[in-house]
Image 1: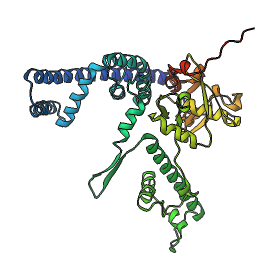
Image 2 (image 1 turned 135 degrees about the vertical axis):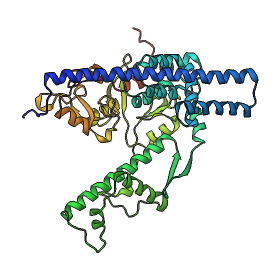
Image 3 (image 1 turned 90 degrees about the horizontal axis):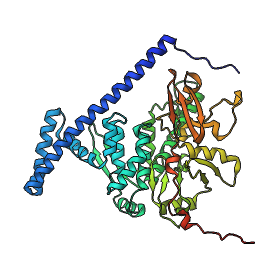
Length: 450
C-alpha cells in the first residue's frame, strides 16, 4: 500500500511558521493579561459601588439606581451598552471567589473564556475550601484544553465538591422546566425549552438523526432521477429529489411536524423516521445504580444527571456496560459486557466521548474509530492503538503532515507540521474518581483462617 502524499513545507517555511505560531501565542497571552487588567479595573468600580451602598444603607430602589448610573457611565466610557457594562460589573465581582483562576488569567495561562467557564461551573460552591479544591482540580485542565472542553470537565469537577446533594438541587431546577417564545424580526419567533438534560439531548439526537435520514433519502432520490427535473405528478420521490433545504431547515421542519401533528408528517427518509428514538450515553456510579449511593450520574458530554432518572434509563436499556478504572490514574482500563465482541468499541466510546483531536468536541456519532498506527503497517486493533476522530480530523491525520502517537492512559500526542506537541487527555481520568464511601458501602470479607 502506497503512502498518502501531501503538500509539504520547506525548511525555511517551517521556521517562519514556527516563529509565527509563537508570536500568535505570545499575543494571545498578552491579550489575556490586558483583559485581566480591564476586569480588575471594573472590579474596583463594582467594589466602590458596594462600598458606597454599605456606608449609606441605601434602599433597594436607591441601590438599583446607583448600579444603573454606574453601569451607564462605564458603558459610555467603553462605548458599549449599559446592560453589557452591568454584566461586566457582575462578572468582575466574582473574581474574589476564584483568586487562583484569576491569577492564571492575569498571567496569560488561560483565556477569558476559560475563566468564565470555571466561574460559571463553580459559582454554586459556597465555601472557600471547596472553591480552592475545585480550582486545584480544574486549572491544570484549563491550561491545556479549550474553553468548551474545560466547561464540561469543570461541571464534573465542581459536582464532586457540592455540599448540597445533586438530587435535591436537580428537583429544584426541574421544577422550573418551561417553554417560551421570543418574537424576532421578519415574522419569525424563537421557541425555547428548559428541560432536564437527558430529555433535551435525547430530543436533539432524535431530530438530528431524522434529518440525516431525510438527507440520505433526498440524495438517493436525486441519484435515481439522474439529475433531471422532477416530474409534475407530485410523487414524494420527486419532491425529495428537488429538496434544497439546508441541514438546519431539515432539522427544524420535522420538529415542527412532531409538535404540531404528533408525527413528522410529509417527511420521508431512508427508514421509518417516526420510529427513530433519541439516544444518549449515561455513566452511572455502581453505588448509585444499586441504590446505595446518591452520587449523580453523568450525561456524557453535558454534565451531572439526576440519579433516579439514570436508574430508570438503565432499567429500560437493552444492555449496559461495566467500566473498570485505574484506582490511581482513574483512566479507563476495560469495559466488559455479555457480548465480548463489542467490548473494544464500548471501551473506546467510554474513554473518548468525542473526537480526540485537541479541542474538538464532535460527538462519537460523527466520528470514526481510527488506527493510530495504520493496520496495513502492522498496527494492532486494540485500545492503545485506536481512537475516535471526526471526519475532518481523520482526513487531517492521513492527508497532512500532522502525526499522532498514543501514550499510556489513552493520551494522544499530536505533532504539528512545525514539530510542536499537543497532548489530548481523555476526560475519563477527571470524571472517574473513586467514591469516598465506596469502601464503607462495600461488604467486607473476613480473612480465611487455617
